[in-house]
Length: 110
Length: 118
Image (cartoon, rainbow over all chains, first blue to last red; front, top):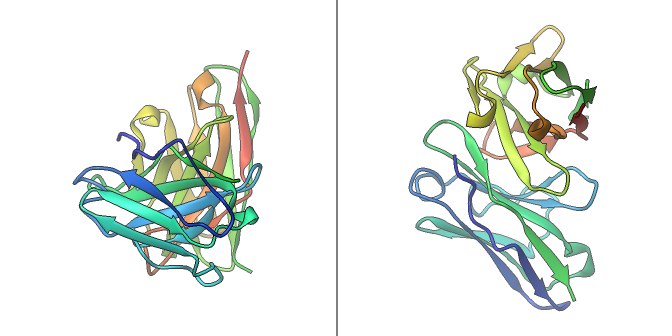
C-alpha cells in the first residue's frame, strides 16, 4: 500500500500548460483504468476533476485532461488560470480492492 | 441534493476511542461504495477504509484491527469506529462516495477533525 509518486510542486504562468505525473505499479495504476484526479484548495474538501483516467465530470472545465501510459498517469491543465492554483492528488484502485492516493502536487500559478 | 455530512470528531487521548458518522442524503449508502479518507495537518490525502455495496470491508494497513467501518441502512449513515487511537491518527476525516458508474470519489463531506493528544 505505498503511495503513488507525484512531484511535490509544479508551476506555470497564466495561459501556459502544465502536466503532473503520477507513478504507481502494475498492481494499481498500470493494472486498471481507474485513475482519478482531485483538486484541493486550502481548507476545502477535495473535488473530483478526472475519473477513469480521462473522463471529466459534468461542470469541470475542458482545460483539464488525463492520460495514462503503463504505470504512469498524467494530468494536464491547459490555459492556466489563477484559480487553478491548488493541491492536486492522483488516486488509483488497486488489486487489493482498496484505493491509494499520490503524495500530492502543489500547483503555483506565477 | 446529494450530500454527505460527517460528525463525531473531537479531542481524545492516546489509546481512546471515537466513532465518526457520515449521514448521506440524495442517495442510498448501500447502493454505493462508501469510504473514509483522512488528511493529517499539512499532509496529503490517505485512503483509510471502504464498505462495498455487498458489505465487504477493507482497510489501509495502519488501521487494520483498530478501525471498523459499518453502515446503518435505515439511517442511511456510514460509521467509522476508531479504537486504540494513536497520535498519528490525528487528521481531518472525510467521508467519500464512489459513484455508481465509475471508480472515483465523486461526493465528499466537509470533513471532521480528530485530534489524538494527551
